[in-house]
Amino acid sequence: MIAYGENIQVFCGNSNPEFAATICKELGLPMGKAVVKHFADGEASVTLEETVRGADVFLIQSTCKPVNDHLMELLVMIDACHRASAGRITAVIPYFGYARQDRKAKSRDPISAKLVANMITAAGADRVLTMDLHAAQIQGFFDIPLDHLVGNVSFVDYYMKKFPEDQYNHDDFVVVSPDVGSVGRARAFAGKVHMGLAIVDKRRPKANVCEVMNIIGDVRGKTCILYDDMVDTAGSLCNAARALVEVGGAKEVYACATHGVLSGPAYERLEESPIKEMLFLNTIPQVGNTPSGKLKFLDVAPVFARAIEHIHGATSIADLF
Image 1 (tube, rainbow, N blue to C red):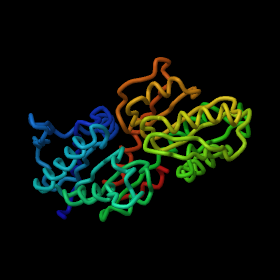
Image 2: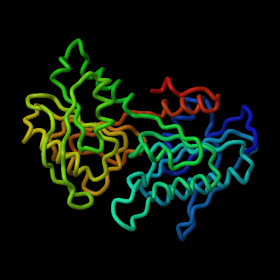
Image 3: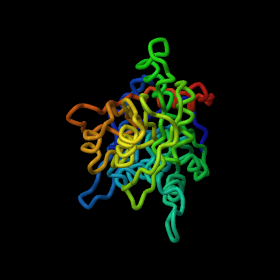
Image 4: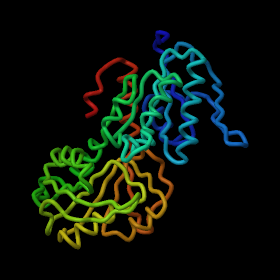
């Protein structure tokens, strides 16, 4: 790797240019000049319109839908910077697609998250910056340094201002994990907002279909905050919300998740659910809302900007947690 100097440059693909623009504004830097487009047959094409030789380059690209197009844009951008003799290349991936394919759930399944990690490394990335991977072990899939930011800091700040302890008794609130797999992150969040913890235990007969089985914990008469890392079709989350009200007797339900993938019937399901407010971070660009405006987005571009400053300056990012 070529030693990089003080020159820092930021480029972005087509997945979330507004997010990248906010990062540049926070950093006080202009966006790097590049053309990222597709040929008629769908091939990704990247042209860098300024030199990156010896520079500390940050490429901002969420691999959200269309996932494969945005992933290929990222890979081609990395390769372009690598061949242009960039000093260091950091792939800034606010939302890491393929993260749900982190293990072999059944025989002959691929582990696609590992494959994508290998592709990013092979393309020439020197490090990765991301937020709230679906499975923490994906950090170990990379053979290069990875900085893993957490979204619960933003959620803690939001809910502690919305429900301050000097006005609300937090014993009347419960953080709820929508499934057993999310208990770890829900427990960490509950500890920071000084609330109890409950778990929705469910069985999933097939992909994107779930059946709620039981509620572990006391939610009767309480305000629940469902906490997860991502919402795709919203089936699991909305079923959990209904179970909290109909089975558990919850007073009201709020929900938050880092990544709003929001595929298929997600908007309709959220609108029809008992969830009063659905809170996301803007790691994936917002493409719509429910008729009642239930969806809200918190901006975490400043968090990524601070992380980029720390990475460039070779200082700890611990204060971001």
